[in-house]
Image (cartoon, rainbow over all chains, first blue to last red):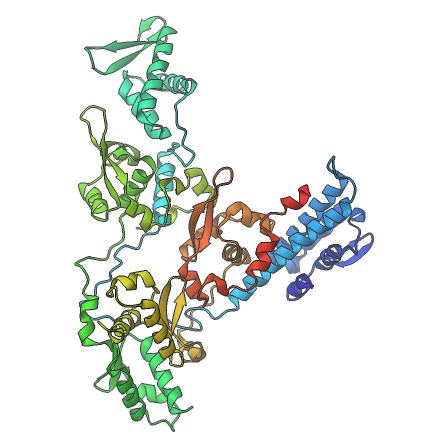
Amino acid sequence: MDDTTKYYDDLKPELHVSLEGFEGPLDLLLTLAKSHKVDLKKLQVGILAEQFLGYLRDQRFKSKLEFAGDYLVMASWLTFLKSQLIIPEDENNGDDVDRVNELLALRLQRLSLIREKAKWLFDRPQLMQDFFPSNIDRDEKVIKEDLLKVQIADILKAYVGIADKKNYVISSGSKEEYLFLDKAIHFIEQQVKESKTLISFSNLVKKIHLSSGINAKFCAASIFCGLLEYTKLGKIQMKQKKTFANLELAKVINGING
Amino acid sequence: MNKNDAERVIEALLFTSSEPLSINGLKKKLPHSIDIGAVIETLQKHYEKRGINLKRVGGAIVFRTAKDLHHLFITKEVTKRNLSRAARETLAIIAYHQPVTKLEIEEIRGVSVGSGTIDLLIDLDWIKFGRRKSSPGRPITFQITDKFLDYFDLSSEKDLPGVKELRDLGLSVKKLNRA
Amino acid sequence: MNKNDAERVIEALLFTSSEPLSINGLKKKLPHSIDIGAVIETLQKHYEKRGINLKRVGGAIVFRTAKDLHHLFITKEVTKRNLSRAARETLAIIAYHQPVTKLEIEEIRGVSVGSGTIDLLIDLDWIKFGRRKSSPGRPITFQITDKFLDYFDLSSEKDLPGVKELRDLGLSVKKLNRA
């Protein structure tokens, strides 16, 4: 079964490689490596790379970037496999060549199968080319039932859009459950540094809650503890006008309230 | 081409056309030997009792749904519209931050959320009221509904990819701005 | 409503829709007593030899012109979709290995998937987000849509040849490394 060779038949131009122990197109080299007919140990990657670069520079092939990409994939696999041979893993030193050849064969087989399937797919009859949809008008009273054409992707894009616009990290799938104290202190430190006016406790909590997505109660607890720590260090002062009133923070600059 | 082939050709042409097709025009697509009048008559009979009827309109023919089935096409009074950008963003924020208050949504979006937007999403049954927050004023929160998950084929809100993941997938936001 | 009425209803709905209609959705428009599977089968037989055929696409059905009549529409031919090889191969991998993650796609192709590729396929409505994998990081997976099936004239993913062959090769070659 030489699907690879068959598939690449319609690929022109070919990359011709000339290596010790092998001379011919790269696809052929891979096909031979697959069937154990070429010793990968003898392969000189440096020469292969040079020849590939030469191929890329060739004016005639400039427009065939897709093919160049293909060859690059093949060459990188060969290189990868060769590297496996040069630096064997501790345990299996024995039949490395066989193992690596097997690996190469498997990868090639899989890729060539997928390429075959992609070709099969796009060779199929296609909508608007080989068969056509209805264009019959419904009656005047007709109202489309499915009124919204929204995909989940639209919603997700909207979210990325906000994140990009606001330029802050809004909560993502990898939500943390708790706001750790060190993080809370770090956050307080930053906020105190950046703000020029009085900061309120609730604002701090809201900010960290919205930007991290962590439960607001946990945020409040951690921020409160963080503030106590920070106050103890003498960097800020906390004020509360009456019971249950909002806590207000004031910077302490050189021992004087800011 | 026999008469049956001619029937098939006319069927397919009518099916893909929103306008009545002139009989003269159709005639040109068929060999001279075909008696188009007879073909149309056969088709008309064939479709007489079906959900779709073949109708003559002057010198043209057209497929129309059977009159007695008109009720199928009178659906609820809904207007077809795209979900506005505000609604998409609001929905996304509720999905990712639930339970979340209106104020918090506004804070994230940077603009105020019109009451129409929330109403629309509630009407769609995609969001619902959640608990009240314990913060001052005890504002009401919003969260997404099972219907939302169902509509977008998600098994839970945990299935929503994170922002980094979305960027890695290369979802482009540019298109969004058109809407 | 008898079976014949049900046929007419489905006919009328399908004839006037350019998109596949889900069988579940159609079921809701008919009385419980109707065996919709049988109705669809009858209709499928009825239209088999006609200019329009009834097709199954995943969990949906749709009317499409018979393939042998494509010459009638040559004037309508749109420019053939000129998808890059990367997009075509990515699509094939998703179709054959679904649900599949971006990393797995890259593993098979041997190169990374460009950021626009996934976005393009989603915009074409050929792929959609699937469940998350339970593997570390819970990556999001992709799967194909009914629209994809419809576009490529497939009635279900079972119509893809050689699925087992490919699946047997697995998604990852790491196993071999360890062996």
